[in-house]
Length: 314
Length: 304
Image 1 (cartoon, rainbow over the protein chains, first blue to last red):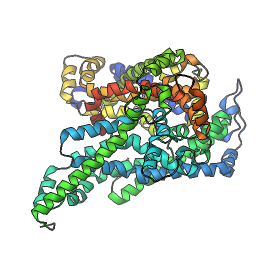
Image 2 (cartoon, helix red, strand yellow; image 1 turned 135 degrees about the horizontal axis):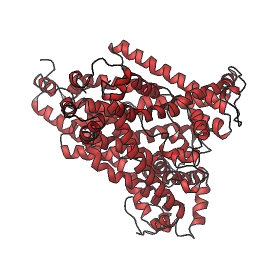
Image 3 (spheres, rainbow over the protein chains, first blue to last red; image 1 turned 180 degrees about the vertical axis):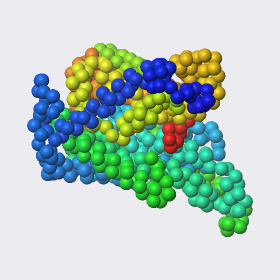
Image 4 (cartoon, rainbow over the protein chains, first blue to last red; image 1 turned 90 degrees about the horizontal axis):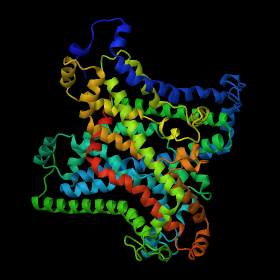
């Protein structure tokens, strides 16, 4: 941060200031233009959702006929839309109830490990999967879960199943498999932030509790958890905001024609209808629906956090 | 006395049992995380005909480098590998430089358009045009079937600007002031004071950029799938995976595998070899930057 005394110029006319800060302007201007083109121009494309857009040469965006809410009505009347919403929300709720608390528990357990080298080893190995692509994770999971994969081998060995199961071909299991893959990939990585928060807790609190005769579990419950509540809330609010934008990579890569009914999420729906079938207006309408819902979710979660804790998160 | 006291010996025993239990659970998690990688590695180094018999875990039974030879004989896979490397190096380099520039300007309290530029970038984090308008824009700009689509649309991640900016904000301001008194201009301050001090955060975001470039396949699929010269490694791997997934969906897999036994390299063994080729470069960089990224990750979480 630059201290006012030295760098802050006295009141000067804007042009003079701009000349003085020419290097700063040169550094940032290309990216301002970039943001306008690649981030703001697509927003202008939302107009398409209210038109019958069929790309033709020599037509400006406003030359296409306006059709009002036609595409939104079509969206809400499409039975497929409800399946897609069920899948999207189903998987994000699973993620929220299972994928969200696990890294917290993992971080607390990791914090209990006193042997530094063992701790480092666990951290290094559990951060690994975060760095590999979904393509690879999907490949690994389909190998593990295949008929002759290690999961079947293990279950057969333990006598839990009598015959190999093709897990990836059973529609009902798809949500669970996707959530497991997500947990497997991100457990270690997502725990970093909680571990950092735990490290920030004043160690004298633990010493005082020890003097008072608190057990380990009591220390965790009365010191560790309250100490990281703020971090937990921030992440929770952000996760709720992202609930509808769960992406499509894992669903696309792990899915196949047999589990289609449980694998299709919002972004895949946009991809199939909007891009593959060229129904651009319809696809844009779905995109707008998604954006609006996600902003409402973020805003709502933030409000809720404010009511609980008396402070906003974002 | 806040808590009920228990006899000392009982506490000690309980602590031991709990320690052991925690160690055990964590060890299990590590095994579940690492095993798949070792399994893939073992299969990629095992003779393809032998692999079909099953039972390969973490050691190859019939060691061979044949699968890798096949991978590196395939001209498409070589093109894909080169493209992936080029886009990763170029994308990460440009990403770091541009993020540094924007973050530095935004860290300057005296910059005349600071508020406006900061808002312009912040808004893009919460709202985006969505897949279709972005697709049409890139089509309209003539970037389909070109290498530039890998670099330009995603040249910087807005979120990383905030990570870097909070890092710069944490630097002692005396250094910049001293440089200023010595008559350095903004560009010189940036190059000679800010950049050298920002090495840790540059390593962190450099890794983030590199990982996302190396791992992306969807842009190839969406924009460049009709030009084999622009293919990337992850996209090729995705195609192989898709084929075998379709096969696995039915009982076709078994039949296909029987048909494959006459050949010396099965799609599965080849897939594992490609997977290793696609994983190793990132994992090779990671230990070197590991000490930095935890700090980078927690910096980003600071409320601005």
